[in-house]
Image 1 (cartoon, rainbow, N blue to C red):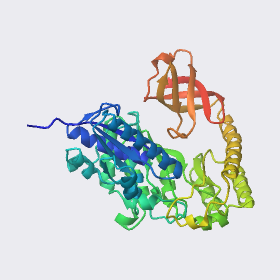
Image 2: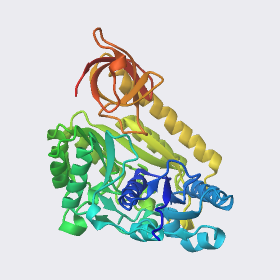
Image 3: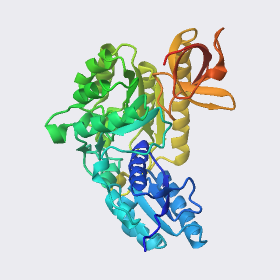
Length: 439
């Protein structure tokens, strides 16, 4: 007697790289004729894709696993599977502490996960994904793992060394996304700048960008560019290709040479200032996003003040901040965690207050200007979108407050581009009116 295909729910935690993994898994589930459940309750199999990047993410993942255990014990699901970074790194401890989970898998065990659910991994579906994002944008993971030796980071322990995805496979995957209606392609990887070194003997991000640009996306966006040995040959491509956003996410983590050396970042303050100056010169109008780690063990008050001054000098368009999290088995672990949580949060607050001033200044300069805006969603009659200079979920939103004469805001549709005039701004949002549709 043929077994009925299971009803599967996949719950994803963590970053967009995990989202891509779950999208591939869901596409495989559909190809195996599994039923995809929108909720965990009532599903036959609950798969939790975990994050283990920092302590807060670990605790969130464990909390969700325990929620899954309760669903299983109450009969609301039959089986519980756990995958992703947390189970890649701590599988033995998790099996010992939470044995109620049926099976644990790592980050790259999709064939085994499909087999555990009674299916098989279909290699002919290479590049197929079941999108979890709105249909008009999608992430493209161009590589896995990382070779950088950053002292604070556990990613290589969970994801392994850097492995580029073959360029033809990426072009095929991107083409399939474009055919599905994706207009904005967001390139991700632990470090985009390493792309191609392992497969082709050199950095090939520029060639990949050219091939992806030819597919026909309206926007292509780059996230997570490592500053050490940055491939400056991508800058002319970014400048000359109109559909490559004038936007770059480059996590610097700090600016003090003292801290950067301990972090094993491979750069100095002088080199970072030179690189950022070059990027701005080569790609006029580019918007820069970065992230900083605050409260690293050897960060002195002078180091922190140097960071604030650096922000005043460079005036980043977007900044994210994380308090330092001491992680097992990293090279920074023996340094301890001497800066108190209270002091870390005081410094984080100071960074964010300074960035609010800078962000407001940047946005004020756009008042009265017209910009292309991609509408992401419409809620309670209000449309929310983004400019070329803003990435989903982390950057500014553009809130539509009306339309020029002859245009009805009720005609707005998510996933379409419009010209919009900026009429008001806040530090992290802009407001304006739609003037015409672009696509």
